[in-house]
Length: 187
Image (cartoon, rainbow, N blue to C red; front, side, top):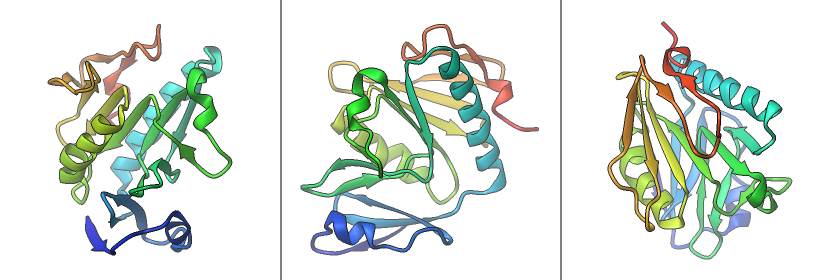
């Protein structure tokens, strides 16, 4: 992940960055972060996970799931804008969904590791999501074929629940959904 520091980024400046192209843009702790487009395996995992959650939500309208590119604006004061791989906003919090992006804290954020984002996803974004109170944060590791689930307890993320390819993924956000993880990881 490459970063470029400016004294202060405004939301308007952020929105004037070019769309599409080979980079994804985020602003974390005042720094513009650019990452290359994800690889094929990353995209397949993202698509598979989106399919599982979206299929469940069509039968159980508990909220909305979104995939990148789609911004989450945590704060406009010290501008904090991320573009997670997937995110879920429950019906109870649907007021944060705007025409352009999410303005507030999603219930769930999912990041799929890639070589250029692994450190950021595990440290910088973990800290940011915890600080802003994201209830669940999932880190999907394509290499290890695991999913780590961080669930907020008293404002902190304790040690994650880790599941492997032979396990099932469940969440209190989606009562009744049980995703066999082998479906996420293409052979």
